[in-house]
Length: 276
Image 1: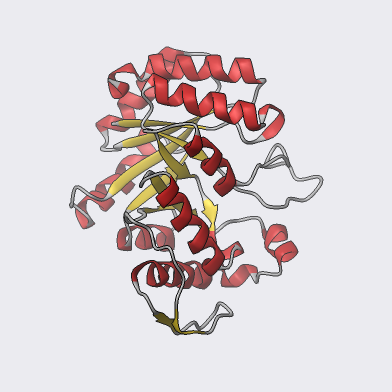
Image 2: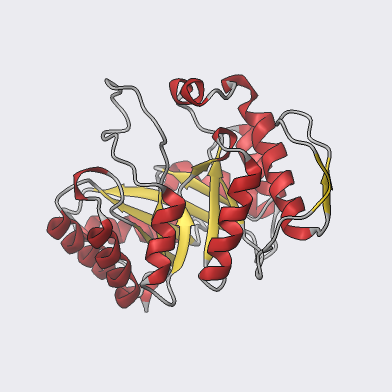
């Protein structure tokens, strides 16, 4: 199993030095990758997410890439239907090349309807926009010149050019447990679930492994941890490994930076077998 850690780009701990220190710490401790999340705009009185402070995920990963050399870079998750795929494809290709091939694109359809409304994106089109956006990005990453017949996303792409293309392919892992999300994951490069217990994850993993037995297909879970019991975290990681999860993203709960960094060290201790 590989172990990832969330970066402190959300809430009161977020900031350039916090992100830099955490990325360097993660690389030194042997984590496989560092991760970021996304909300662009949220209602003032929303119960979740707990903070409106969300540093931009792509720029945060670019900052993290600049101060590291090995650790992978992941999004957990980018809400693709909220974004036009052409500028996003350019940003991700640039980040992939600047980081020398370290990017994993975790992607989801999103759930916060008010956020879609603020961005002028039809909430009920998000599934169609997700599929078409991925297809459009993959087209511009593969073809030069490129043509693409868009149906849902406003775009006219006819024999055009957009460079650079990614020098290494960008794997796409799909978040979510709905039937459309799982089917989408099976068509792409991996599944990135969230907050499921090993018992809840087991039937999903069994299905994914049965339908995509190839070793290149990734099965990943995101797990929020309060940092209090390293033994419990170690047991949880062992439980995930037992049901076939090959990658876990540990997300420490929000706290001040020094406490956050100490929590990350405890997480590394709990996952020592995975990091060695």
